[in-house]
Length: 594
Ligand code: 1PR
Image (cartoon, rainbow, N blue to C red; front, side, top):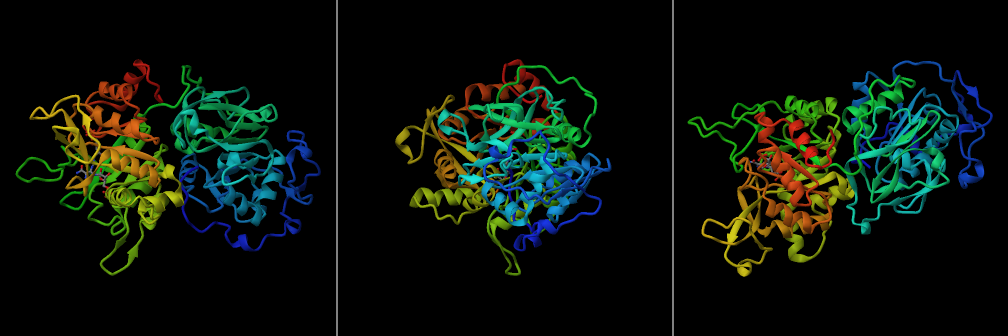
């Protein structure tokens, strides 16, 4: 499952008028009279009817073209970028015939199961796909592109799938104590003959999904790897030339690129010995954050604040300039960052679509960075000087189209949470609700900018108060965490605890938990705050602000339920390399992606 966006489908023209497949006759095609023995017997395939008249072209070339089935439901920019990075050109499927004619076909399923099947059925793509796969043509399904091969899915269903693999795709069971969606880097148990996973070994790959297929006696011959998350689920299948993976190779760094490369170049000799180790579960993520804004000369720079003050303490009082966003993001990718966040820190006053540098930053970064990218700042409804109204959905859509995997909402989520706490009513109109409804909650992060406020007694304020580890300046033993908007400039009548609970209800998939007091101080994360929030919500929490040493990362993972830890200053100033953080965590027995 990856963020969806509303774009015209490459073959949208065929959606309304279903192509008559029996009249389709590709040039240079050969008739395939019977399916290969690789596949299930018909009686196991449910009621799916295979057209008898489809033809599949014989593979003739090993050129550098890959056919992409983008049925227009979502953002496949990352897979396009990854394929181009590997030296391939992309041919988009326009008609079912393009599937049958493909030399190699990649199907990055996006969005939800039911609408995807609906489009595939209406366009005749379902039949073409089944024929193509039945004839053992080179195929790689990704995420939903794996799930659709099964008999059916429970996602808004039951909904019938392509029926090529026995099994029902079901939702992860959150009552088993796991957080759903399954987001992050997880290790695989790779079976024999997986071929495209030859370089993976037990290195982590990136998953984002709420539904999964589970191994059974009926489908065991298809399974090339499984993964553990609550229970064991199918992370990849392989039969002959047909492959599909539940994870996102295009977001899994170098190891993900190797999976794509091995699919595109079958029979490559194993070049690397897969790494040995004890990878077994979801890795804790280390995230590099780039606070971005224009400096006084108008250049977009990565800056870094001291408790959110990003100006130098000099006569010129200029905006601190720590580098160029695209260059730094590329460097952090190479250094092993599991994710990269861009925060447009003046987005609250400069409308992000008003000028386009941040969009350009994303476009350029996503060409060479193959881990998840988050972008935040200024996501809200907006009317520009000429009276043109932009909805927050349009802003988010532009970010997704430009390469973001997740968007992060700050100020606007605070206003929405305040309303919700007051009224108890979900209006469905907030940017948070709208974007998570359209793109899925896994694509929406809420960024919280709280400031610690000490009090003498838990009843002093109508917000969640905790006993703090280190008393306040006047010996206060308690504190609450006041949310702010506009980059910490304005305090609001809501606490971080109340906000976190509210935004989870409103559809946030993750919380980026900053702390103004700790920002840029290098003294460690605010453990009291991170513990409070990560114990209170069922969605992943990213601890942010204050990292100064690798030990601060292990401390936050050992003492709280944070899923990820984010840092900025120590990476920008090259005080601590990302790899040093990872190695330290490993030494401490904390699972990370290496
Ligand atoms: O309110 O939706 O426009 O979003 C604005 C976004 O910009 C929010 O995510 C908000 O956190 C961020 N932001 C606004 N002003 C600042 C600032 O610094 N003046 N940056 C700012 C937030 C905090 C972290 C920082 C960590 C780690 N920066 O992102 O990277 O504290 O730093 P450290 O490791 O150096 O301690 P909207």
